[in-house]
Length: 503
Ligand code: GLN
Image (cartoon, rainbow, N blue to C red; front, top):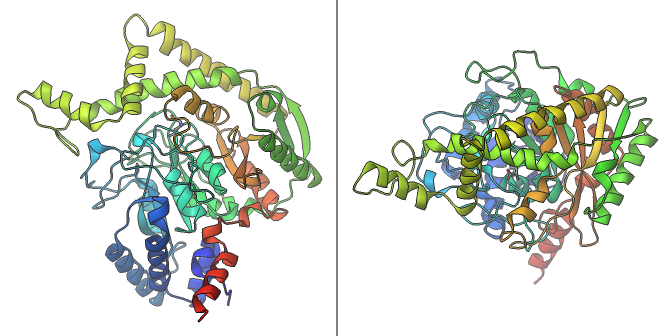
């Protein structure tokens, strides 16, 4: 048997091991729980882990397997971002206002994984209501990057990305409104996939920007991301925006040659502002795709400079409407006062953090009479132009390559005082949400400080097969995705064991 400790295994490797009876789901769960206990105090990737519940589910998975059940994820523990509601397990969205909220139902994406046999390992840290790029906006304290504890893990799904990078979960779920699956995946050296709008149900995803939000997998490799997407995707009667189109077999494209595929390289994504090591690593990755037989086509995406302003108008406008429901009456925490109005005011005043308030104000302003036409309506019009720009590009190419993030992981506290600086982290990711298209981030190198770099591959609407095919081909000839941070690498553990065993 594979001699590595179980936390080093990918989901597909674990499934094989479980299938062969090499270990039980209970042993696997126990091992991960111990590892979380040992490593997570430094990282704070998890907001909540309920060991008894995890072990009970694992024992049940073992019983099911003994009775012949072959569900596709039977016994696999997964971490879930705390903006996805989970029945009976407190869900806070990283906000004080939802402290103590125990949802009565489970989000469809999570429920489908559970129906396939997966075990909810824990809920992971997130920027409050998924608003942020560093996980520093969590009301419960930041998550740290496992590659360097002074750095942020990215965000808003920073807890999920850090958990997978540190091997505190074989894979995890994140959500992506403007980059929140891909950017933390890039900054933590793991794989993150943002599905096309409508591909995965949003039912039970605590809404931030409803026309942008999608649930996506964060994994150690492309095959695992494909497997999780396969199970989550598909129509859901509880989400009217989920698409009623059949889900292709994503695993069927893994291993297919990329000979002849056209990879677009948008000139606008490689100028100014980007860290030179990121530029180099992404170009080197594209050259490798060329070696594999793809054709690289220089393209223009002139709308890049419009993407951030449009995103921050649309997202905040939708957020201001979505967050109106938190008033202290129905969910979570209440700060009581003499009148109902004062109860609302005090609950919201104390329950929301600064960034959430900033966004509610921005969004409310953009939607208010007199400014609506100038801001919100204009943003929607430009959003259409961005979509047309991308549609035209996808007439020429199959996949578009770019950096996922202009820089590697920045320092904790470095951007918290400057929201605009923080928003710039999303420059390359938001267009895909505005257009409803799909994208994946895969590890493609390291900077001089040893921090991971991500390659973004964007595909057209419902183009998941193409981006998976190219990303998988890239991983077949590279080793970046196999690198673990020091705390999770086998050598490090070997060294620790030798130290321990010395007299
Ligand atoms: N960082 C972006 C924001 O703050 C994206 C967040 C997300 O995708 N949830 O809005």
